Amino acid sequence: MSAIRLLVLGAVRQHGRAHGYQVRNDLEYWGAHEWSNAKPGSIYHALKQMAKQGLLLAHEVAPSTAGGPPRTEYEITEQGTEEYFTLLREALTSYDQKMDVKSAAIGFLVDLPRAEAVTLLKERTRGIEEWRAAVTEHYVPEGGPEQLGHIGEIMNLWIHTADAEAEWTQGLIERIEGGAYTFTGEGEPFVGVLAEDQENPYATGERHPGDAG
Amino acid sequence: MSAIRLLVLGAVRQHGRAHGYQVRNDLEYWGAHEWSNAKPGSIYHALKQMAKQGLLLAHEVAPSTAGGPPRTEYEITEQGTEEYFTLLREALTSYDQKMDVKSAAIGFLVDLPRAEAVTLLKERTRGIEEWRAAVTEHYVPEGGPEQLGHIGEIMNLWIHTADAEAEWTQGLIERIEGGAYTFTGEGEPFVGVLAEDQENPYATGERHPGDAG
DNA sequence: GGCGATGTAGTCAAGTTTGATTAGTGCGCA
DNA sequence: TGCGCACTAATCAAACTTGACTACATCGCC
Image (cartoon, rainbow over all chains, first blue to last red; front, side, top):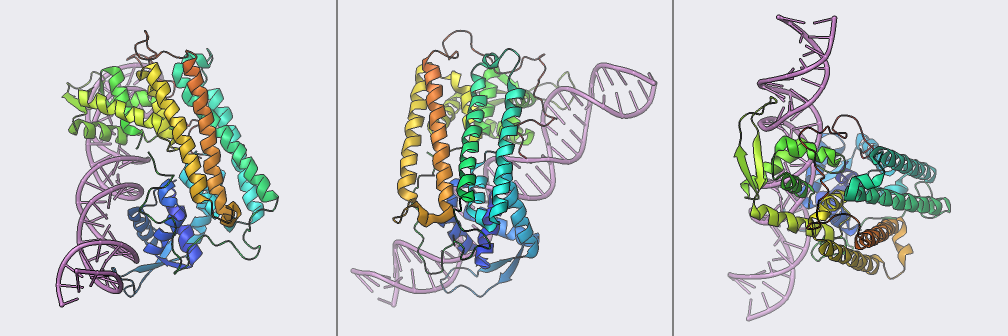
């Protein structure tokens, strides 16, 4: 799974109705252009694609007051909402060491009820443990890991990463169970999008810590 | 950077001369089809592309004895070797949390002199530390991390991951400095490719622990 | 001896990602 | 007033990725 669909669906959903540039700006506010493939081309493409698939509803709208070509505004459909939660749950549950999907999922975590978030995260830790066991069993030759030579370091890296993530997930579960953050249905939600007039401190242009290099 | 070029260049280089299917098989032996985009289409595409760019030299060859369409054999050029080491050094040095590139780089680590490997890995740890400092400074608002709400957990994940990787890198440095593994110019190298008649225990077909899901 | 399974080698179309480019608007200013 | 610059918004071609598909040969075996 690539993170782009989850990100775009989530962003449109938070706005209720949003045009491409707004989504793009939101994702920049999140820093998503740094840790995911949320580049303009991909965003506009995802919007069109998902509109074609019935996950979004496209509205042609009068040219913007701010110049530029006419906008298209998108609204999430029922089917889109379903897809959104499917993606979100899957991203939270499955262990596939992809930072972008993981990060996106955390950003939308509070769209779920608190109890479900915890359940999914617990399933995630279980998945990590299973994966770890399978890797150690499957990729260790009879002669012991030395047989693999330096290639064994790849496995070593995987294990180390998996352990670190399990630890982090455990910590997050504890924080959530301890009452941290505001989940859906618990009153005033935390808004992770920009208002129309708000300036974006993380807009494109300068380099940021997430950049490769 | 995607891992495919590094993987393909490295595989061709280890063989001296290889056709597409051989490269594909090697990468399967490595398990690379599970943790990277080393799928048939990508491999053949990369071979053609790099031949066009002068990194590889294509030789048309008589149809194989084993059936199937006529093979093309590839040989790495001087320019290709240069590119290979550039990619390898970059993959080792830069911190960009992409598992596939990292894993590929470790697989080829011993193509470098031991001393250089250590230097690059140390540079990597330094890069991680810098990145960590930049993230904490840049993404923490004045009001403290609580201001970010659950979005702060994304940063938390980044930091946690970075720390885990720094730790692992440190361990690897110590093992290498302690004399582990055989690096270039140190006698009989460890061969990470299959001989012509050797069976591939990790060939495509069944699912393996690295699979998403 | 014919037929399906398996192995070898590569192609292809469809979809996705990327980074550059287009295009319109308003603003400063000489 | 007219030039260039910056911003908003979206498009496009080129490159890349994916997974299914073709094509040919051999092997087992009933």
